[in-house]
Image 1 (cartoon, rainbow, N blue to C red):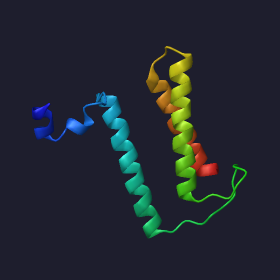
Image 2: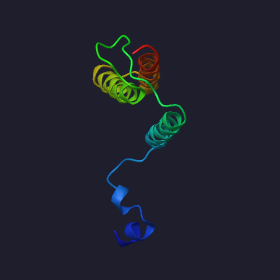
Image 3: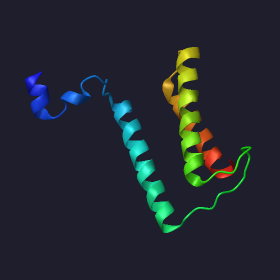
Image 4: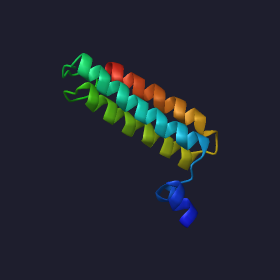
Length: 101
């Protein structure tokens, strides 16, 4: 325990840090950084798309992340197929929501 705390990773020991998990968290962090820069350089305008409410880019990003998470959870619970298929479907759903939502 002391050696884990000394390395600075003790507070992360509860998580199963596999490569896919690390890629997921890095991708989310990069997406948030990119959206922040995009919003600062070109402020978005609230609009109504396919969703039944007026949303900004940030709103659609948040809803898209939730949608991708639910797709992945449903995939995990309903099938034994490779999780990468669900990740691809979640990414596609999120991109569609960002574009037309």
